[in-house]
Structure formats: C-alpha cells, structure tokens
Image (cartoon, rainbow, N blue to C red; front, side, top):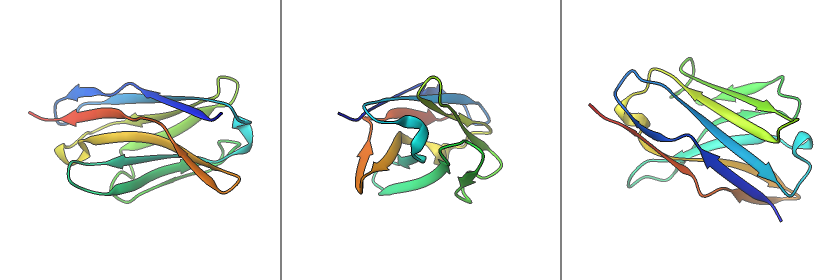
Length: 116
C-alpha cells in the first residue's frame, strides 16, 4: 500500500523559511516522479513542483520559482521542499503526490501558515 507522510509545516512570518519532508513507502520510490501540490483556503489544488526519479530535473510553478527548491533522497525514500521568502499567499496545506500505474496518490498534507 502506498503511503506518503508529510511533515515540517508550521507558522512563519513573511520572509521566513520552512523545509517540508515527505517520506514514502509501499512502492519503488526511485522509479517515480514526485510532486508537491498545495491547497490554499477556499481554493483548488495548485501544482507547485516536481522532480524526476533521478532527482536531476526539477520543475516549478511560476508562483514559487526562485523561492522554493525541491530535492529527493532515494536512499531515504524522501522528497523535500525548501520554502524560502515565504509570503502570505503561500499559506496552504502542502501535499506530496505521485502517480503509480495511472493512479494518483497524495498524503494527508502539512499546514503552512504565513502571517505577520
């Protein structure tokens, strides 16, 4: 069974930083692309970043490019999201996600709140 468990969220002031972690199990981690998505209050899911199985190629939404960095450690079955220069608009629940055999999987998420 696929499990994705996010952690690292919290409350920060504008300009602050957080590092999110997602630990995966139940599948061959080093063979799949991993993604981070988020959902702000009252809004739909927003794709924000993805990383290839090797970790060599990363992509970002324009809204986070230059501020967020995705990485992974295949030995630890973990994917990370470094959040820098946080803004109030970044307030959301952050989820890691992946697609395996055509089926989408997502964790329970971790809350990030940015406020002064």
